[in-house]
Image (tube, rainbow, N blue to C red; front, side):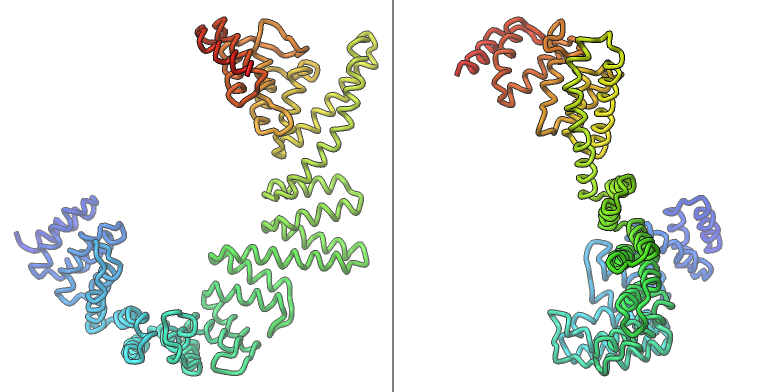
Length: 504
């Protein structure tokens, strides 16, 4: 088959995404010398590489590299460097990158230099070779090479394997400045750090700020973080909260999650400071605005401060609003304060319910008394519901007990009771398993409960669970169930076991 036919078939198989067949025919076309097939086979190799089908990608790139295709050498270098086909081979990777450079790709020199970095930080001889590779890449207009050249002379102080005697901050800065002059953002940022900390030069915070701004304009998210910090502290620039927040949020928008948290902290500190120094209503309103901004950016502490401020101002409604916002955002302190507020409000109401209950039930003809009792009962329910919805297991348990004994009086039935009992299982004050057992056990209510639905299987399950948890009062109950076959097949031996356990 002629190469033109293989090329035609390769194109057709590419169109219908039959990539294995396309690989077969394009490979034949390239071997037969069809130049048009080269670019198609290269694109197919990139496709296999992106899909992590590295052996097929390697097959395509090997053929092309053997015919002087520089970009294929780069991909083969990557496959060898990272061991994509099963084994890392740094020496082979270096060879591929060097060949890519020989074939006219400056990126090959850059990648060859990068491969040498670990050894270059330990050996002056290796460093000199790496410098040559990076210089070759820089001459090919890969200006990010200057950042690597600078690192060869500065990073040694921070690398625990590096030979610190190789460090030369002045030389490092000269490379960073060369890269910065040619528009490389990383070089701008690294030069800025040198001026900020005085590495290889006198400390010059203003120049550092200028370089960070240039780096940010060239896409460096970390430079945005540094600008946010400088504006927050007023280092080398006028202290400006809005600018600080802007740059922190810009870093966040560019992928640095911490930028949002830092912006929130700026607002938090501004809000707290403004509260302390506020001498007017307007000053306090400004402080609240800052704190609300902090909260909107995820600062949980801001909601607590806002709640406390509202409490001091005597605005209980606002306090509850901020506590709810904080709890919804995940503040454990706000959640606990919210629960504490509602339960403290509910306690005197429940005491009132207890006092009224007996009188109201004995004198049901007294409509006014009965209505007062029901109103108080519903008020207690509402308060405990709010505490329960804030995640308080004890409040769910209180509601379960309320529904069991007074459910119909507040319009609650079986569903409300079982939901509250389930959500209140972790209560340390009330064992809702006992409430469920009382709901299911026996033909009729035995303890004055208004909700009851006999279910022997559920009653047995509850009793067994409680007895297994060493609730001694349920030993004889479980013995009776086994004896009578209540909710379970009768088993005299197990009945005797639980009966004897109770006697012990």
